[in-house]
Image 1: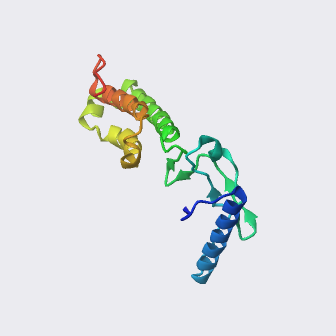
Image 2: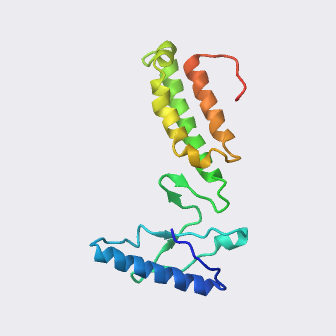
Image 3: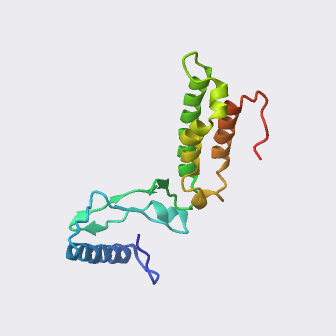
Length: 170
């Protein structure tokens, strides 16, 4: 990720500056016998004005135009131009729902684990659900969209604790 120290006046100046920075990075990598890949590098725009975030930049690395992505993923976290983490939390909630379905199948089948086994060794829920839910939580925990994940984690606790009545999320 590159940040610019001074405001740029035009889109073309931004493209030129970023391509120049990419050329310097490429030169530095080659000095240290590293090989940068244009296929694994993307460009994205984060801007205070929502209309400016959708524009595509033509940034080049070693003569190849970089792929533009509106919602880039960095270390497993999907970024959004407002940094609300809505897309990331929606994906995480979907993943937790799939894991909860797996736990439900295990708990309700005659060949799977009984609910007492799931409760006594809740490590299965920790391994399946909480590890996915808590990944990078320090980054997105103050987002307005965390309730999606909270609902799924509450469902996980219902499954492994055999509680029939619903409990409040807090």
